[in-house]
Image (cartoon, rainbow, N blue to C red):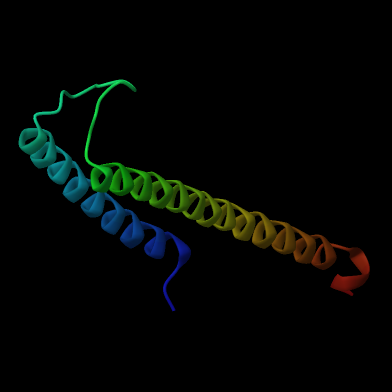
Length: 99
């Protein structure tokens, strides 16, 4: 079974690759539609381009929240493990446990 950190690392690589691909696509679409880098709200653009950007934003928000959950999970596992280990040590260090 893969550890959460390995899963997060591989997921992060996939996310970075997809993000780079979307960046390249945005550059190509800017060139095709002659869009400036920063446009504001007054720009007329194709509806399919607007839908694509909205979908990307939703996907990025979902990925960020998923990665945050994995990172928190990793910390929770470490905290639980440390607490349990310290509890076992304290039980073993009692005088009646040594007798």
